[in-house]
Length: 559
Image 1: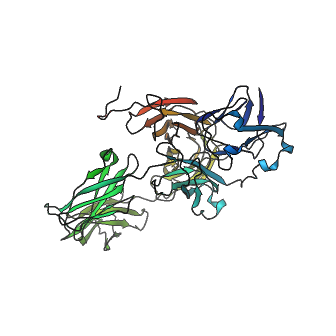
Image 2: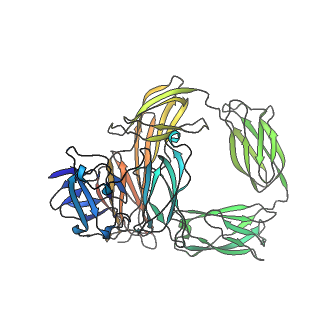
Image 3: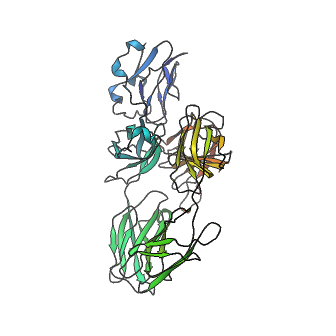
């Protein structure tokens, strides 16, 4: 067996997620860094990405992979299962003799990419879909200057897309709705994590019902709208009857309808996707309360010890704006407030308290509020430590957001260095938590930081070089369309528990892969419409066959 390494800066074009393409003489290892010459071996393409190889071998011998026109590298066309070996060409050459046209000039050291695949619910690639990404949080804002504007891309013929030259950070990625598909979105960090988007076909659901007052009299000209996801509006007729169609959402969605009529309080009614599964129409009646009277909003403001906080101005902001000042007992009273309206209630306290803000609905009986103001974090201390996985291996260049549970200040970014170490000179004193908002989602319970500071805090991170892959099939071995896959992990560490949550999607063959997984036992949960959910343990790399058992129409398992 001979082993050689790709030239620094070379690229591998990766096809068909989770498929094995028969090749007579080569096998590319999972880390894509080494090529073994193995008689009778295979080429394994783990994901829809272009992976840059940054290392060189010592003797300068390199392997260059060329792709014939049928598998054009520019279009990154999917290779179907069973693609013959002669569809690929390989060469070996000394590095100094390589054609420079084969080597990508590279990008800036700090720029990263977001890659993924756009798939239908059946796992088929969808091309021509516009993809947009907007920075949620940047890991190194001081290097990139202003936050970048929205970045755009287009899915290619095999559904793949790639957004390059992005400052490292966490991004909201979404597709624009098309004539056939609804929009889909996800949150992901730049780097190796795939941002796959599963598109739901637009399907209409008819909603109908009657709008009345509280004593059952029909209300004509009441408007009914969907809160999110549609601009369609219905108007009730002389009998209070309405009917209109809204787009059917994704699996597990909650629908919200808003009922409004002049002189009456608006009302929001919800129903779940499970209530309309398999149905083309759904009935929903609403009764609205009259707004003939004005009511009183009152309450008290106190500190965490229960002592009244006087002299604070409270605001009630809505169709009309109101304000009052708390008295010596912490009480306030706002008269003549229109009922049936949603207001923003807020206080900007003077002194050592945080701003308080909440949304309130004033009903026909008025409203009584009890508000407890939270103190500001008034002390800061130095915090240092390191990020490791459960094997004790340092986790370098990983970013988390640190929060103080008692403070409304912006979270502080922690980024480990090449040895996994981090240091914050001015961490807020109090109970700390650490988390990320992108997939994979990390949540770590931290310690109580005192004014004396803390050194050598260890944060256990579910991050490593492992991959967990497999296929989701039914009892006959046929791939299951659009299953929901999640990979969970937990570990009790210093100061609290560490948790991680990853999501993945399948391709047309039912194949899935979770990348950058840390060591240890993970829980894989798989569910799909019409099937019994499955939960199994995964503690080592390898291929998993997840078989789902179908339900019959009554909800029981089929034989």
